[in-house]
Amino acid sequence: MTGPRHSCGVIGMYGTDDVAADIFKALRIIQHRGQESAGISVFNGNKVITAKGSGVVSEAIGRDSLKALSGKCGIGHVRYPSAQTKAEMNAEPIEVQMTHGTIAMAHNGSITNYQELKKKYLDTGGSLMTDSDSEIMSKIISKYLVQNNDPVKAIRSTMAEIEGSYSITIIYGNRIFGVRDPYGFRPLCLGRLEKGYMIASESAAIDVFRGEFIRDVQPGEIIELTQDGFKSHPPAAQCQYAHCMFEWIYFARPDSIIDGMEVYEVRRNVGEILAKESPADVDLIMPVPDSGRAHALGFSIGSKIRYEEGFMKNRFAERTFILPDQKLREAGVAMKLNPIRSTVKGKRILIVDDSIVRGTTLMKLIRMLRDAGAKEVHVRIGCPPIIAPCYYGVDMKSRDQFIALKYTTEEIREQIGADSLGYISIPGLVKAIGKPENDLCLACLNNKYPTTIPGETHRFQATLQHDYK
Image 1: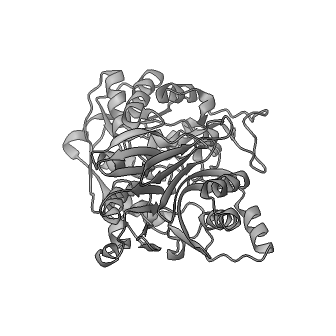
Image 2: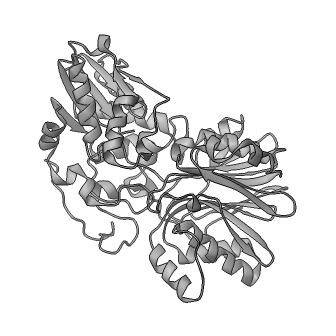
Image 3: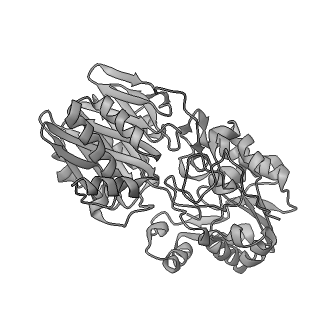
């Protein structure tokens, strides 16, 4: 609730008796990845049929629409708009009609050379119905399909043109494809079901069917699902990994496995390391629900200070992060969380959250705790200070929104009204994730971008220095 916002989740399935109903169920499991729109496309034996709309999955895809989606292979999408306007026309999957068939595609990520590709496409006489980078990708794939009718070659040719982050599911006839960009920014995994196979943004979507998690889709790999099973089309060359660290810190469900590391375990590791790096003399540790829970538990284990639930969460409140402006989102905080007075009154409290972007939500939460009788309120954050924009699918596009870029830690502490404030270090975060630093995208923390971004510093060049004080 307090952290950055993320764009989208994808599903691809083949072989189940009622694939639309199963995709619907899987999309509900990854609903946290996007709540602005949702959609499903299936191949019914003759053509691709799509149902999509605004809202959460149950709102976007009605019962009648679901019944009309008959078939044994299909793809699904949940969307949170990080770059494009909020409009139903941008809901996915996106279909492109061709002379010899239809392609439908669902995308998680952000294409960094979208404007360049858009201009090139429009200059050659093409037209676009949306302002989504997903549409331009699907148009490019369809262009190559028209040329050779080989979907794997068409996808590879498209990958050579596009830059940025993408985990994609594609339906073309009775074939499903899962594609992951050569850096592996966004997660994608493969699972075996009782009847058929599945591609998903998170392994938790496979678990709900009691399926078998086979493995992560490798960066640069194309997975093809057919009636005969699955086939891997490996990358042509060795890829340079840049897995988004926010998947472990905030975005993914705690019970998911992302690139070999369980999210819950990483978050608990973060809390234990944070307790060693930034200890506090307090009476109890409490999380900011929900994403701060495992971080706080880890801090409790590392500090040997007891863990308590200090906020009651209203699970039926409006989804604050999709409200249209910051003032409404801040007002929504009071509707969503309420302090448990018996827990906090007269206590020295340490609250643990996943990240700070603007700091406005934490300011409100701290004020609520003091009003409920807290003697002291200390804050620890399971992510280092965010100081640079994300161009790979996270809703952090402007440096103006980063409080850590404008103020020192002490100044931020004073602004949010905390008695103390501490962040995990970048080395501590890397240790908690358990992967080499060069395999992670930490650009929003250190201004070192894995790919070339106009006006930004590539991580293999000299980098800017920041003093967080």
